[in-house]
Length: 186
Image 1 (cartoon, rainbow, N blue to C red):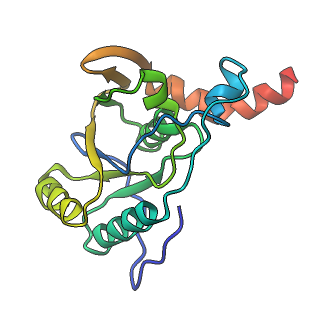
Image 2: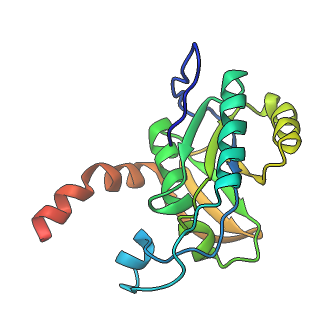
């Protein structure tokens, strides 16, 4: 993610208990070339992500506007590994779990691991949520409230049905030590 923020850059702040996770942008059926297809089913093919330049510009300008108004605690790209990895990285950074409920007609694997372009994960204070939603709506951005940070579990649900749960400390261990394991095991 790259953007110019005049005067005062956003210094990432770790998520706090009850902070809200917002997704700006649309998750599409675009698993082609993804980390998921490379490592999980060892599949080559599928629909690769495409950039919609007008959507990309609209989302970027909207997120930069929210940041300039000090309404965003932390912003994270949603590319390599998709939502599951990006949200897990935020949890590891904050040493705090989350409860995420995905509502979509896409399958759980597509929602979690699609690498669709022009998406941003925002960590925001729940007290600013109405203002943020209003500004995103004014800019005609696609966005969704995914959940909140709390506890010590990273929990993903699809339409309120559990699909994945992992303790933050285990995610942190995997995140920090995966390169060494890859090198050791070839």
